[in-house]
Image 1 (cartoon, chains in turn purple, brown, blue):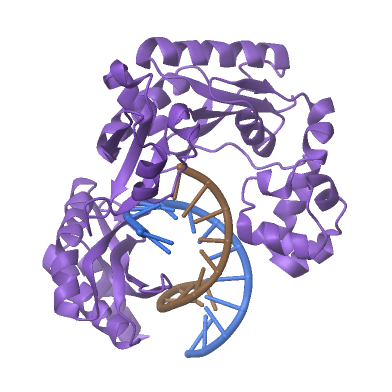
Image 2 (image 1 turned 180 degrees about the horizontal axis):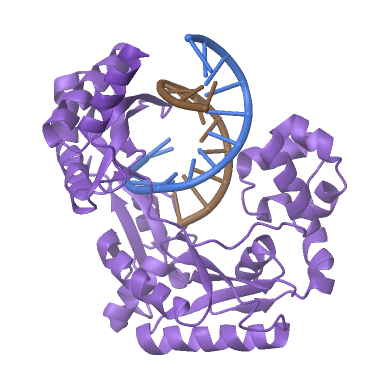
Length: 371
DNA sequence: CCCTCGATCAC
DNA sequence: CCTCATATCGAGGG
C-alpha cells in the first residue's frame, strides 16, 4: 500500500486558546507575550492572531515594537501560560489519536499522522478523514487547524503550511513535483535562514534547483545526514516513518537576569527558582538525570554551555544545586564578558525503573577491580 | 565508542 | 530590542 501521511497544525495556537476562553477578544488584535522581567515591557512576542499580524506583528519581535504597531487598536497583550496551552494540546492530540493509527507529536501545536490504512491508500478518503478530524476538533474545542495530506512527512507538512488558517491541502503523488519545483528552499522543513544562505552561495534558491544537485556535493557541504535529507526531501522521496514520540529526554529552563552580571552568587540566586522548578519536574516524572548543562547567554547574545555526564543518574535537589554552582563557576570564569541570561538543562533522563541501582554499580566496580 | 561543545531549527 | 524549550547533527578529543 502507498503511504499517505497527514500533518496537523493548530492555527495561531496560543492566541486562539485565549480567544476561545474569552470570545470578546475575537475581533481585536491579540498578542501572546513572553515577558522577560527586566523592565515593564521587555520581552518578545510568542504568537499573534491574524488581526495583529495584519499590523505587522510577528513571532519574536520585541513587545515594545508590537505595542507601537498596535497603538490605539484596542489590542490585548496576554502573558504566555504554557501549562494552560499544554492541557488543551493534550486534549486535541487525543482526538487525533482516536481517529488515526499513529500520531507523532512534534510540538505543542503540531503532529504528523499516518492515514495509510485508515484511507486504504486513497487520497479522497484521506481528505474526508481530515475534514472529520477538523470538525471534531472544532466541535470539542472550538479550535481551527490546518491539515496537509501527502505521500510523506515533508509533503504533508508543507501542505499544511500552504493554506491557513483553517486550511486543508491535499497533494497527490502526481502533483508533488509541481508543488515543490518553484518553491523557495527555505519552505522545506529543516531549512532555516543559515542553510538557505549557504545554499544560495551554491547557486540554489528553489527546491527544483536543489533536487538537481548531486548527492555527493550536498553531503560534502552539509554532512552525511543532512545531505541525504536535502536530496530526498527536494525530490519528494523522503521516507521517514511516522513514529510515536516517547516523553522528552531532556528538561531545561532559562531565565533573563535582572541586570547583566558575571558574579556567580548573583547569577545563581536568580537561577535558583528555575533549578528548583526543574528538580520538582523530574521528581514528578519519576526520572533521574545523567547529564547536566549550564547555559550562558552573554551580552552580545553569544551562547556558551558547560556540561557534565555522571556515572550514576541523580535526582537529588541539593546535589543538583551544588553541581550547577560548579559548572556556573567554570562558565563564568571562562569569559570576561557579562552574562545576560542563564539556564540549566538536565539530559539523559532515566526512569527509575530502567535505572541501575547503586548496588549494581558497586558490583560492576568490584568486578572490574578483579578483572 | 563516549563525552563535550557549538550550531541549527523552529516554537 | 533581543524569550523559551527541545531535538539533532557533526566536529574534535579521548
